[in-house]
Length: 236
Image (cartoon, rainbow, N blue to C red; front, top):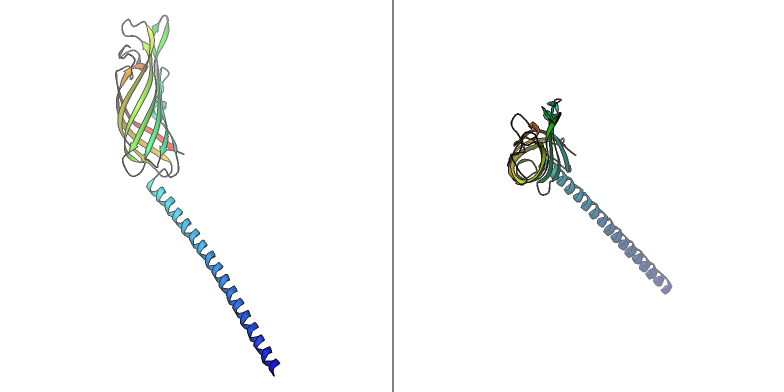
């Protein structure tokens, strides 16, 4: 009888141990499962937040993640003639975090004059390269902006004093401007601007005008006045 009671107590103790072990295993498994669920929920929340950020960027910034742009004045190319040609284009770098555009416009104008210089036809020309800093005033890189710029130009033609001496002049100038730009979500953009400045180095008003030196007529002056409204660009 004593042996049976002892045996029954041992059986009960073993059953209790089994139950405790099973319960501990279930708790551990439940905790691990909860941790996995928490990690999955955190990942989902992160993905949703990133998606919202990307979507807000796309809405706020028409450029989205595009950083570069190229503009070209097609009308100048279409107006080319045998004795007169001009070219105007711009490369831009867009900083959407600061709503800033860095632009490098280039301009070239060339003209063959019917008059002769030492028995040969002479040419007059202007070549410009600028660096523009454009700060957009809105909450995105689009719309109205203010700008500052510097310019290096080379002007060549017949000097006005005797109408026979052919020369060239390199000048450096600075200025300010205001402009407006419309950028579409598909990457195309268009804008207009007005810039005013002055040359700080080099001589001005040294070439004949207005019948001669057509290619040098724009930047032979002391002051810089530029109006742009026929350039179309593409961002990438």
